[in-house]
Length: 169
Image (cartoon, rainbow, N blue to C red; front, side, top):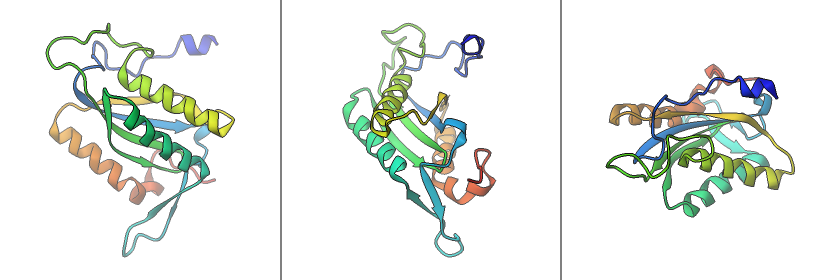
């Protein structure tokens, strides 16, 4: 448990995660187990395809349900890879001045609430926890940054075998 207390935050220091902005999230499976999908096809003529497993189908269901459930966010784009998920969330926060909540903690930022609820709903249906303790986030800074992350999501299946999260299983 001490190891959890000593972990460094991955959050941008001083950033308000509840403001009107896009956030790129990466949620990984525990031990990077390839249980969410398979990348099939050669990609020579049509590009590789993602074939969701039962775990991936459940994750897909909750990404879409939570998108409809939360008024303060929308899922802009996502991809369910074999051992991780990338999501671009649009946080519908306050544009002028700081948000109503304090500088975000894991408990009170809109993206963190989304990730926590998503994992909890999935795990309940799975009957076990399949997710890493943490997720990674990146506040998208401008249109170019947004386009690069959107392209990354779209091209991720084509680059799977070169991905830093790639493992053979």
